[in-house]
Image (cartoon, rainbow, N blue to C red; front, side, top):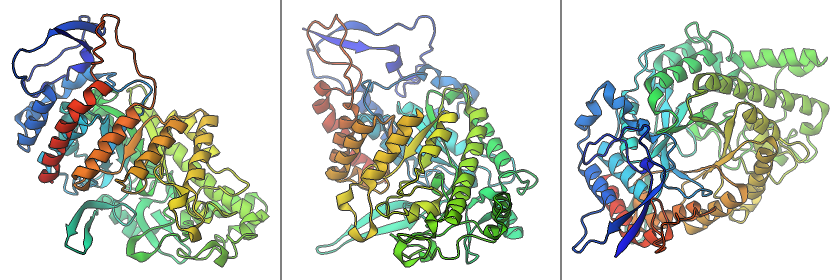
Length: 576
């Protein structure tokens, strides 16, 4: 009896962790072909994937091959253009790594657990992982002094696992926002389930904090004068406020250094560069900070336009509009962080937002955010253009008060989206101009699951953003906004992905809880459903026996892989 195997040279990992053999691409690479493989007459040896998982679990924190020097940097080259066996037309799933995968001191955390996790994810059919490349970690020693070593080690680990990487240029601080946790460990008793949450704290580089101390106006400021150190104010984008460089120059230099360090990985192992443009890496203002209880859901948030640079811009815009009085500050009747729209003069049903002044202010406020996004993406495009890596930008899924006329929470965040004004079409057009993917959150949410008093509508919001992306001709990718492990959330993502034609989905987040047995089974099923979201490729003609086996994630192999993936997950959970 013979078994037909469909394979390509891209199936071969450039470095086999078991044999240490290097596959060198070249003219001898063959197109997809068939080969007869005799059925074994004795018990089969462990599968290659299982051997990889075992090898990863037993690996030392710093494998010798990671220290192989310059030659090691080029081993991945054969991976260019790999799709890792994903059925064409399906939606690739990535998984976010823990926020402190690379910690504040530049160390790679929990290496054995990460290595085992990567192998388990690969066994489940995941396309790759996402990691924050923290500005506060890499450039912590001083301006222009970059430490990429921990990230280089991580890239090699991802490559050996046969995965791809989404690298986030994280120019914001970690800590003080929804989801800024490093670990989530559950403690169980007979009657109580509690959660221990470690808040992750990675500030901006120390030398940047020094500049903030000497010039507090380089950070966002609210009406009461509260400074927010999460991200540099876009009001000083083009001013030399960071040791003689502008923030845009600093971001460009950082990305350029990343490109040079990882040049040979870009476009193959490193598939995507997500460019951070605000708090949480999102294109928005820090209008709803959770730190110190400043904001609480479903508060409207506050406008962040009171540093001297933003005020100067507002004054100039008001003078140009012939209303100097409009430039004396933001709206005086916009309320505070925790209020509801109808409690304010600006956001209520027939509030100031709909007046001539309100329209002027919102156009200016949102326009400043759009200009900032375009400047940062222009710098990224200049750096990463031609590398083969996809650019993307993240837009926040602010779904509360979406059902009101003013959409207050979106307005304070910088999205001029009201009942009669589309705030996402201009963002989509800007991203299309730069060839960037629009990455949107809250893909797992359903309207019926939200509290009625908050006027939430995540489903309508996703539909609006989908339409904006379609009309602008920009690709749409997605994320879940909150950690979810239930079938309802996964089903909603699958439904949204199929309806929206997502380019990719990134799951929040890899941790111990994900690898718990029930959660893991739900997740593996979800990855399978996403992979089956499109057209299934035909088998080659020489597969006359219809064996239905090919290098990928197909029906015939699912049940065989399930025990292996579950076993890997169990071992991985124990490693955390």
